[in-house]
Image 1 (cartoon, helix red, strand yellow):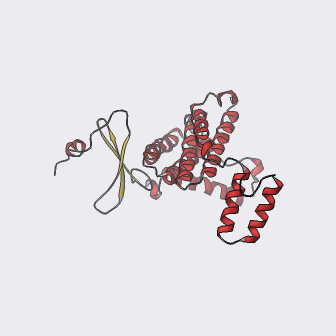
Image 2 (tube, one colour):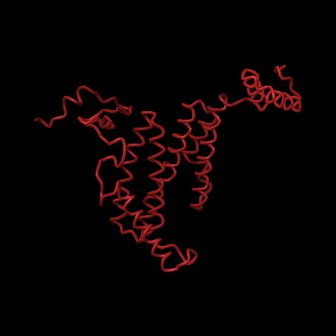
Image 3 (cartoon, helix red, strand yellow):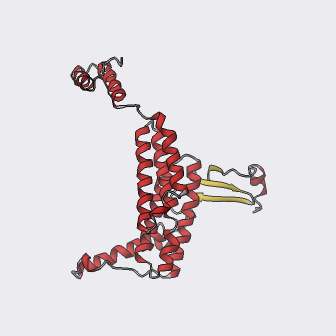
Length: 263
Protein backbone atom coordinates (compact mmCIF):
# COMPACT_ATOMS: atom_id res chain seq x y z
CA UNK A 1 0.00 0.00 0.00
CA UNK A 2 1.47 3.36 -1.02
CA UNK A 3 2.08 5.88 1.75
CA UNK A 4 2.08 8.78 -0.70
CA UNK A 5 -0.59 11.33 0.29
CA UNK A 6 -0.40 13.28 -2.97
CA UNK A 7 -3.84 12.03 -4.15
CA UNK A 8 -5.41 13.39 -0.96
CA UNK A 9 -3.67 16.73 -1.29
CA UNK A 10 -4.49 17.11 -4.98
CA UNK A 11 -8.17 16.61 -4.15
CA UNK A 12 -8.03 19.30 -1.48
CA UNK A 13 -5.99 22.27 -2.78
CA UNK A 14 -4.33 24.64 -0.35
CA UNK A 15 -5.75 28.18 -0.44
CA UNK A 16 -3.14 30.78 0.62
CA UNK A 17 -4.33 33.13 3.34
CA UNK A 18 -7.16 30.80 4.36
CA UNK A 19 -7.33 28.15 7.06
CA UNK A 20 -8.87 25.12 5.38
CA UNK A 21 -10.46 22.78 7.93
CA UNK A 22 -12.73 19.77 7.59
CA UNK A 23 -14.05 16.77 9.55
CA UNK A 24 -13.42 13.25 8.22
CA UNK A 25 -14.16 9.80 9.61
CA UNK A 26 -11.79 6.86 9.87
CA UNK A 27 -12.66 3.26 9.05
CA UNK A 28 -14.31 2.83 12.45
CA UNK A 29 -16.47 5.93 12.09
CA UNK A 30 -14.40 8.04 14.49
CA UNK A 31 -14.22 11.75 13.60
CA UNK A 32 -10.88 13.41 12.85
CA UNK A 33 -10.15 17.07 12.21
CA UNK A 34 -7.94 17.85 9.22
CA UNK A 35 -6.22 21.17 8.51
CA UNK A 36 -4.81 21.72 5.00
CA UNK A 37 -1.32 23.26 5.07
CA UNK A 38 0.79 24.48 2.16
CA UNK A 39 3.00 21.36 2.24
CA UNK A 40 0.58 18.79 3.58
CA UNK A 41 -2.07 18.44 6.25
CA UNK A 42 -2.51 18.23 10.00
CA UNK A 43 -4.83 15.56 11.41
CA UNK A 44 -6.15 15.50 14.97
CA UNK A 45 -8.68 13.57 17.00
CA UNK A 46 -11.85 15.48 17.74
CA UNK A 47 -11.84 14.40 21.41
CA UNK A 48 -9.19 13.58 23.97
CA UNK A 49 -5.56 14.29 23.29
CA UNK A 50 -5.30 15.44 19.65
CA UNK A 51 -2.67 12.84 18.69
CA UNK A 52 -4.63 10.03 20.35
CA UNK A 53 -1.86 9.05 22.76
CA UNK A 54 -2.43 8.30 26.45
CA UNK A 55 0.75 9.13 28.39
CA UNK A 56 1.10 7.13 31.61
CA UNK A 57 -2.40 5.75 31.01
CA UNK A 58 -3.98 9.22 31.31
CA UNK A 59 -5.77 11.29 28.71
CA UNK A 60 -2.84 13.70 28.70
CA UNK A 61 0.27 14.78 30.59
CA UNK A 62 -1.83 17.53 32.15
CA UNK A 63 -4.17 14.98 33.74
CA UNK A 64 -1.18 12.89 34.87
CA UNK A 65 0.54 15.80 36.64
CA UNK A 66 -2.76 17.05 38.05
CA UNK A 67 -3.23 13.65 39.68
CA UNK A 68 0.23 13.93 41.24
CA UNK A 69 -0.62 17.41 42.50
CA UNK A 70 -3.89 16.13 44.01
CA UNK A 71 -2.01 13.30 45.75
CA UNK A 72 0.42 15.87 47.15
CA UNK A 73 -2.50 17.86 48.53
CA UNK A 74 -3.94 14.72 50.12
CA UNK A 75 -0.60 13.90 51.75
CA UNK A 76 -0.44 17.45 53.10
CA UNK A 77 -3.93 17.12 54.56
CA UNK A 78 -3.06 13.76 56.11
CA UNK A 79 0.02 15.27 57.71
CA UNK A 80 -2.11 18.01 59.21
CA UNK A 81 -0.35 20.77 57.29
CA UNK A 82 -2.49 23.86 57.08
CA UNK A 83 -2.92 25.47 53.66
CA UNK A 84 -1.91 28.73 55.23
CA UNK A 85 1.58 27.32 55.79
CA UNK A 86 2.16 27.23 52.03
CA UNK A 87 0.75 25.17 49.17
CA UNK A 88 2.60 21.97 48.25
CA UNK A 89 4.62 22.22 45.04
CA UNK A 90 5.49 19.37 42.69
CA UNK A 91 8.63 21.05 41.46
CA UNK A 92 8.03 20.29 37.78
CA UNK A 93 11.33 20.03 35.92
CA UNK A 94 12.13 21.75 32.66
CA UNK A 95 11.43 18.48 30.83
CA UNK A 96 8.08 18.10 32.62
CA UNK A 97 7.10 21.62 31.61
CA UNK A 98 8.18 20.99 28.03
CA UNK A 99 5.86 17.96 27.87
CA UNK A 100 2.96 20.05 29.14
CA UNK A 101 3.82 22.94 26.81
CA UNK A 102 4.16 20.76 23.69
CA UNK A 103 0.88 19.06 24.55
CA UNK A 104 -0.85 22.43 24.99
CA UNK A 105 0.32 23.33 21.48
CA UNK A 106 -1.60 20.34 20.13
CA UNK A 107 -4.75 21.57 21.82
CA UNK A 108 -4.06 25.08 20.48
CA UNK A 109 -4.03 23.76 16.89
CA UNK A 110 -7.28 21.94 17.55
CA UNK A 111 -9.21 24.78 19.15
CA UNK A 112 -8.23 27.14 16.33
CA UNK A 113 -9.51 24.55 13.83
CA UNK A 114 -12.68 24.02 15.87
CA UNK A 115 -13.30 27.76 15.88
CA UNK A 116 -13.19 27.76 12.08
CA UNK A 117 -15.73 24.91 12.12
CA UNK A 118 -17.91 26.93 14.54
CA UNK A 119 -17.70 24.12 17.09
CA UNK A 120 -17.67 26.67 19.88
CA UNK A 121 -18.31 24.15 22.65
CA UNK A 122 -15.16 22.32 21.57
CA UNK A 123 -13.20 25.58 21.65
CA UNK A 124 -14.40 26.32 25.18
CA UNK A 125 -13.45 22.78 26.24
CA UNK A 126 -9.91 23.02 24.85
CA UNK A 127 -9.19 26.60 25.92
CA UNK A 128 -10.43 25.86 29.44
CA UNK A 129 -8.15 22.82 29.44
CA UNK A 130 -5.15 24.92 28.37
CA UNK A 131 -5.87 27.46 31.09
CA UNK A 132 -5.57 24.57 33.56
CA UNK A 133 -2.19 23.76 32.01
CA UNK A 134 -1.04 27.35 32.54
CA UNK A 135 -2.25 27.25 36.15
CA UNK A 136 -0.48 23.95 36.81
CA UNK A 137 2.86 25.16 35.48
CA UNK A 138 2.44 28.53 37.20
CA UNK A 139 1.99 26.84 40.55
CA UNK A 140 4.26 23.81 40.29
CA UNK A 141 7.17 24.63 37.94
CA UNK A 142 10.54 24.56 39.69
CA UNK A 143 11.98 27.38 37.56
CA UNK A 144 10.62 30.86 36.93
CA UNK A 145 11.70 30.58 33.31
CA UNK A 146 9.28 27.69 32.74
CA UNK A 147 6.43 29.55 34.40
CA UNK A 148 6.98 32.58 32.17
CA UNK A 149 7.21 30.51 29.00
CA UNK A 150 3.62 29.35 29.52
CA UNK A 151 2.02 32.36 31.16
CA UNK A 152 2.67 34.66 28.19
CA UNK A 153 0.05 32.71 26.21
CA UNK A 154 -2.77 33.40 28.68
CA UNK A 155 -4.17 36.52 26.94
CA UNK A 156 -4.71 34.66 23.68
CA UNK A 157 -6.32 31.66 25.41
CA UNK A 158 -8.67 33.94 27.38
CA UNK A 159 -9.46 35.80 24.17
CA UNK A 160 -10.35 32.67 22.20
CA UNK A 161 -12.44 31.30 25.04
CA UNK A 162 -14.47 34.52 25.26
CA UNK A 163 -14.98 34.57 21.49
CA UNK A 164 -16.20 30.98 21.54
CA UNK A 165 -18.67 31.52 24.39
CA UNK A 166 -20.01 34.61 22.64
CA UNK A 167 -20.18 32.75 19.32
CA UNK A 168 -22.21 29.93 20.80
CA UNK A 169 -24.55 32.41 22.50
CA UNK A 170 -25.17 34.14 19.17
CA UNK A 171 -25.87 30.80 17.48
CA UNK A 172 -28.46 30.21 20.20
CA UNK A 173 -29.98 33.65 19.61
CA UNK A 174 -28.82 34.93 23.02
CA UNK A 175 -27.30 38.33 22.26
CA UNK A 176 -27.31 39.39 25.91
CA UNK A 177 -25.34 36.28 26.88
CA UNK A 178 -22.89 37.00 24.06
CA UNK A 179 -22.33 40.54 25.34
CA UNK A 180 -21.83 39.20 28.88
CA UNK A 181 -19.24 36.69 27.64
CA UNK A 182 -17.31 39.47 25.91
CA UNK A 183 -17.44 41.63 29.05
CA UNK A 184 -16.18 38.73 31.16
CA UNK A 185 -13.38 38.10 28.68
CA UNK A 186 -12.33 41.74 28.83
CA UNK A 187 -12.39 41.67 32.62
CA UNK A 188 -10.25 38.52 32.68
CA UNK A 189 -7.72 40.23 30.40
CA UNK A 190 -7.72 43.31 32.62
CA UNK A 191 -7.02 41.15 35.67
CA UNK A 192 -4.20 39.41 33.79
CA UNK A 193 -2.38 42.62 32.88
CA UNK A 194 -2.89 44.05 36.35
CA UNK A 195 -1.52 40.83 37.84
CA UNK A 196 1.54 41.20 35.61
CA UNK A 197 2.08 44.68 36.99
CA UNK A 198 1.44 46.25 33.58
CA UNK A 199 -2.14 47.57 33.56
CA UNK A 200 -1.23 50.04 30.81
CA UNK A 201 -0.85 47.13 28.38
CA UNK A 202 -4.57 46.36 28.62
CA UNK A 203 -5.58 49.12 26.20
CA UNK A 204 -2.68 48.21 23.89
CA UNK A 205 -3.67 44.55 23.64
CA UNK A 206 -4.82 43.23 20.26
CA UNK A 207 -7.06 40.75 22.08
CA UNK A 208 -8.76 43.57 23.98
CA UNK A 209 -9.20 45.61 20.80
CA UNK A 210 -10.84 42.67 19.02
CA UNK A 211 -13.22 41.86 21.87
CA UNK A 212 -14.22 45.50 22.11
CA UNK A 213 -14.88 45.55 18.38
CA UNK A 214 -17.09 42.48 18.70
CA UNK A 215 -18.99 44.14 21.54
CA UNK A 216 -19.57 47.30 19.49
CA UNK A 217 -20.77 45.27 16.50
CA UNK A 218 -23.16 43.44 18.79
CA UNK A 219 -24.79 46.54 20.26
CA UNK A 220 -27.54 46.94 17.62
CA UNK A 221 -28.65 43.38 18.36
CA UNK A 222 -29.24 44.09 22.05
CA UNK A 223 -32.63 45.25 23.39
CA UNK A 224 -32.73 49.00 22.87
CA UNK A 225 -34.09 49.76 26.29
CA UNK A 226 -35.73 48.41 29.38
CA UNK A 227 -39.11 49.53 28.07
CA UNK A 228 -38.67 47.58 24.84
CA UNK A 229 -37.91 44.47 26.84
CA UNK A 230 -40.99 45.01 29.02
CA UNK A 231 -43.22 45.48 25.96
CA UNK A 232 -41.93 42.25 24.46
CA UNK A 233 -42.63 40.35 27.69
CA UNK A 234 -46.09 41.93 27.86
CA UNK A 235 -46.95 40.75 24.34
CA UNK A 236 -45.80 37.23 25.21
CA UNK A 237 -47.83 37.22 28.42
CA UNK A 238 -50.99 38.26 26.54
CA UNK A 239 -50.41 35.63 23.85
CA UNK A 240 -50.05 32.98 26.56
CA UNK A 241 -53.16 34.36 28.32
CA UNK A 242 -51.10 34.97 31.44
CA UNK A 243 -53.17 38.00 32.39
CA UNK A 244 -51.81 38.26 35.94
CA UNK A 245 -48.25 38.71 34.60
CA UNK A 246 -49.55 41.04 31.88
CA UNK A 247 -51.12 43.28 34.52
CA UNK A 248 -47.84 43.45 36.45
CA UNK A 249 -45.91 44.34 33.29
CA UNK A 250 -48.43 47.06 32.42
CA UNK A 251 -47.90 48.55 35.88
CA UNK A 252 -44.13 48.51 35.34
CA UNK A 253 -44.53 50.32 32.03
CA UNK A 254 -46.81 52.86 33.65
CA UNK A 255 -44.20 53.54 36.34
CA UNK A 256 -41.68 54.22 33.55
CA UNK A 257 -44.08 56.68 31.97
CA UNK A 258 -44.71 54.45 28.95
CA UNK A 259 -47.97 53.37 27.35
CA UNK A 260 -48.26 49.58 26.98
CA UNK A 261 -48.80 49.93 23.25
CA UNK A 262 -45.44 51.65 22.76
CA UNK A 263 -46.75 55.13 21.85
